[in-house]
Length: 310
Image 1 (cartoon, rainbow, N blue to C red):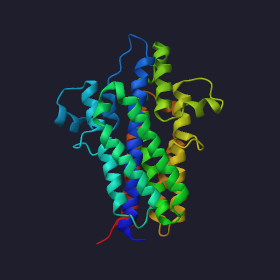
Image 2 (image 1 turned 30 degrees about the vertical axis):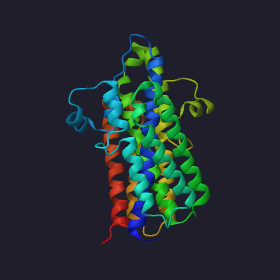
Image 3 (image 1 turned 45 degrees about the horizontal axis):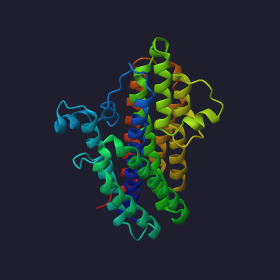
Image 4 (image 1 turned 90 degrees about the horizontal axis):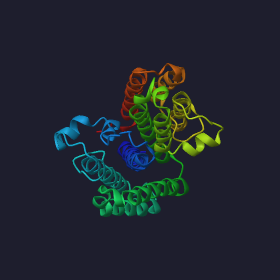
């Protein structure tokens, strides 16, 4: 398989996953406002922190941190490489240059997703139409995954798609946990338990994990239990551990994967060694920062192993 083709399908999957996770995060933040106690405040600017985009956002919008500005940046701003519209456009471009690899059904779906995302993006900046747009985009991204699994041969191209999707998902899950949960550790649960419970439920819903969490017998909603589930659970598709295990399976199916497998093994070892009870105060933030550096090293190793071509 050509290196440039492998890279294109890898990035197509990453961009699609990033757009879907952004939509989930925005949708859940909108719903969170309806559940919080009246005196509780949530800043929309928290979403900018999820992407580590504070500096770039300030360059474009200055000190304006209101809802509309944040939504424009995350949904439709073409200067933001991680906005939904930009991600879908980048995914479509990567799909276009690999038309001989991806299936016709995949190409049709990514085109439909592209036209939907661009046509309705500006209207979704306002709260009234936002939920329909985000839900529609999530459904189309999920449809793309289903079509890929059902029509694309499970060869090397398929493995690179899965690597891209799960690596991006692990990264986004860690960012959501970091920003949304860190402020509740360690004493806010005792100080304001109602607020803390709503926020932990929000973290679960941001990752579409609330129903699965309850179905597996997890009755109490508290920081330690939620962190253990989202970081260590091997069965839930959006837990960090599960995503890394999916990447491991893909690398095992590829040739010459020793270097990225070594990087992955080190990352998994660190994740499994950490105790969620120790993630108090700044401990969670420090661990997530370190973990994201590990994700970056794994990405670099994959790039150097498979995508270097001249």
